[in-house]
Length: 291
Image (cartoon, rainbow, N blue to C red; front, side, top):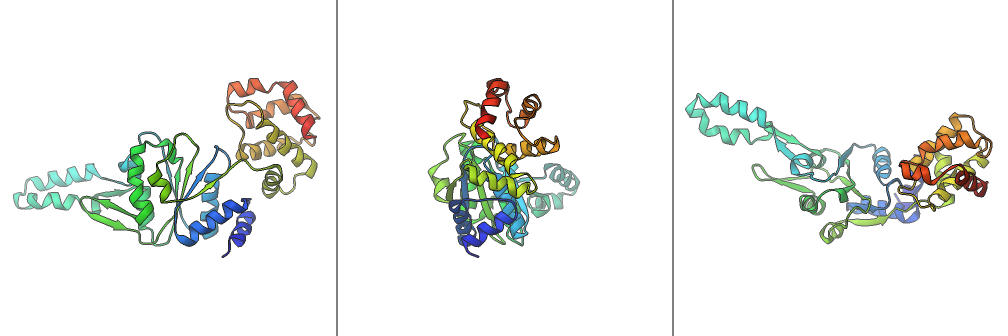
């Protein structure tokens, strides 16, 4: 498979990737290297992992990162309740009690979390480490062994190596800087908001029956909105939601009913400040430019 073939396959599944992104994903799959995707929220980083799993017909394993996440949530933890029950059951038998500690730290009592699940799959899954920059810096240390050697170490059991190397995609929204050690282990691509032509292609891929003039208006307004002073610029997902809302309401021209159109902006503007920043007169200005 060439990168151009991959780009075409992604497009058939509704994901319009730039040449740079398609090449980065192709090299990641071909070389077996993790791929770090950076960019603003809503530009399609997470969606790429989902589409890749569909394209490869394999399992998607997702780890949503957050502040305070640790190994027990990401890699493994022990089933303490079962261990306790086993210890109690063997406490009355002195001969068995000496072997109880070794027994309870076995596979039977191990709870696999997403990272361990990914390396134990018989067929290479897509492992999505979503919003990795939301996790603490200490958490990155847990990831380094996996990203470089595709293995995890459990002190009680030893090192567990990948049965089939997962396709790893990491996403980051710029919440904080990632360490050089993590970046060195990954290929890299920056995913920006799409240009007008690309965004129109994305809209057409998802809503092929949408009239061309209306599609151009929708994309034009969204592109113009991103140039306004907003707390949260609308992403591609919000654009698609708005297009579906407009089509569902039977709107054929964005200038026909400004009041109704203003109500639909709930699909694009997600904070009170942003809603206040786009009153009716601003909306009409944006629609006028898009028309």
